[in-house]
Image (cartoon, rainbow, N blue to C red; front, side, top):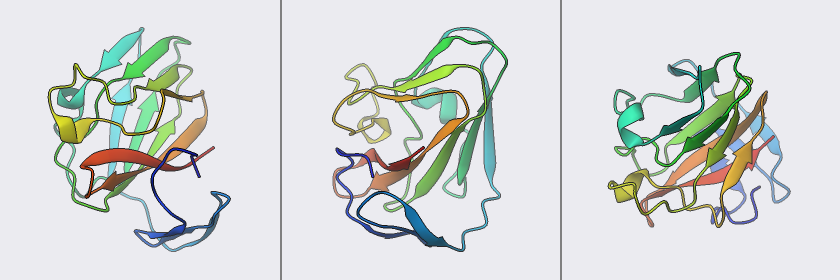
Amino acid sequence: MHANSGAVAGTYDRVTINVAGHVTSGTYNYGNIFMKNVTAAATFFSGDFSTMTTLTDVVRVTGTSAVACSLRGFFGNACAGQTVMLVNASAATLTLSNEYAGEGTAAARFAIGADFVIASNHNALLWFDGGSQRWRIVGAY
């Protein structure tokens, strides 16, 4: 579990996470995938994810360019408790920006304590905290 996630061990959308941040059980069949291709260094805001829906359960980043990529915002129309697996299947390094003030949609911001890096071929499980109206990290590899 990410130290600043704000989430406690528990079950999120049928995926159970223990206090060490490990998934201990899960029956979720991920199937609603949103793809984002990275071909050059880029910065993404909530508008770049506007065609996602509350049924989206995987965001898969692809691309062969080993570049830096920042996610300053994310899906801004989430439901409380929604989980999304962010899979970095690209050669890029993804940095999630903590509480980026330039992201106009407050509910699209990450509340993760500090910027968080997702290396190539790694992932993070994101959870939308309905109380704070922010995206949090509840697990990462």
